[in-house]
Length: 101
Length: 382
Image (cartoon, rainbow over all chains, first blue to last red; front, side, top):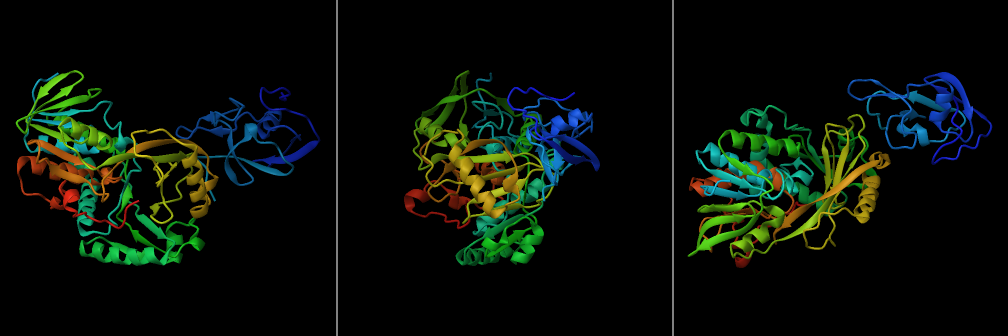
């Protein structure tokens, strides 16, 4: 399922973009969020809980809940639900609280 | 509610709880602690949680050393079922002026006399201790590996529970509204829930100390001012010590949870009892941290809060009994370091009340020093 309407973000579908998720090559559209592209590609688990390591998926989708924090281009704690997808992005599942470099 | 007590302590922060614990431990049967809100609801619960031995005067070094020795064994001594989370990873004091470096050197001589393992460190070593430190703006640093920080809520809770177990009584949401003084002697405390007759009252109200003193007819030269703190989102552990600078005006620690807790002073802060949060602090704090520890500047701020510093003319506490109202004791005016002095406050005030020989001579911290012009000047305060 692809997100086409969003309460606060404007999803104007542009050209096809390439990115990787944990090394796997995926595609999304210019103008959508990283999480939206992952969701459309069938990726349902975006992160894990800190203490019990339970799966965490797409939840609030408006940048509030921290359920979708991922490592993007080496930067931890990126809110993928409100971060725009860019060509060549390296997206990784975050384990733990994130390592600040 | 009890209508009489041997001692009534006003204020349920680190000082009040620790004084209650020490009195109860020394066999005082009927100790009552009042707090107008909940335990740890005032300055203790809002503090930056650091404890350092890197002071510039011998007495403060001794007080801080005594406190740190206590905190090292606090869980066992207080038979606490939890953990006060004492993280003894040091304090890195950084300086950006030569003048401050000179002060550090002088301080370290004093500290060494007291057996405190502090030392000057080169900028290279400072960067090894805190890799994300921007040493290009610094001249040097001092480090003491035995300094650290601990959880103020859990620490106060440990004292509170230990005091309670020894028979002390705590009345929360109970506000002292008046102090009865007759013929120059304390007779009791009026609260919003009733009157407690007592011969001994301890003012441990920190931020509200002036108001409490006024209830006993005592005027003290202190004022309160807001000091703000913010906390960031958590990241994996990356900074062991508290990083602090007097000149650059900041202190920042990474809590065991992974979030960074940081604060700074504001010379233009009005003297009042507000504990609101301001945009101005958020901006100035962010600018400072971005300059000194740039990596942390990229973290999101989760929230900010404020607590009261109770300031005296020489920024040192008042540990004294009143000459005007017999039975009125003061453990106030910490000027921002009441939490780290906590264990000593409990010890010396209980000794003062019971007429015992003091463990540490704090007689220079008397109230009369302000009138007599004998200020106790400490060079290293934020």
